Image (cartoon, one colour):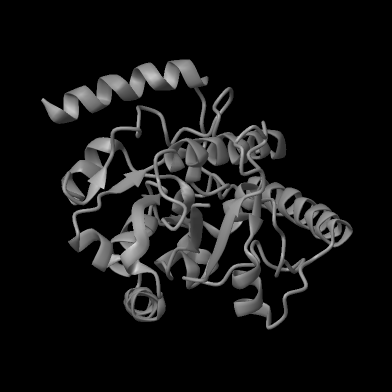
Length: 277
């Protein structure tokens, strides 16, 4: 069965301090670039990676290109998937317009074909809205997209997916490592291997499970978490996230989205066309 190696991005400037949350779509720090080099050196499956996928934010695209440079050198292009963007509407978690990304990443590096106008709009009616229901639905949508991408790949092939610490919990439905005082149980450039729980592809939820080898590599034991333990951590994480998002609203830290999603799409499409003219 195809293995999906999920990776949290390397350190970005927004990770340094709360004040940097106001930075729009920040780059990796020098330490982040060193973390990518370390992951590249330690990751043992470069030769079997058949696809690179990442959130369209700068830090995730940069992490994918630098950490999986051997695959990129073989001609693999990073597919940018908007479903993989981070959960909040902080400026640091809101992506750049496609026209901006096209100036920073060549078509030989990143495939932006799925990055549509208003992909970075997180207001009313958006599939990227900042609430638990929308995030849960987006996690499922991302899993379905990845499952579709695995079709045609061989049983020994791997996909490397670079995304964000908060969203990884909605993506994998796995809360291992979660503590109530942090927004994620994943460290920068940490990677874990997953496969689809239903090998027939009939599961409507496209549920994932961490491989036994991945769990043992990380935890030193083949014994995984129970369903009850996962549920308890999920509830704790959702409680933490709800409180944290409320604080961000109270402190006026989030980007304000005033249009509905359809209006935002039309406005952004016009702006993108003008930027390319």
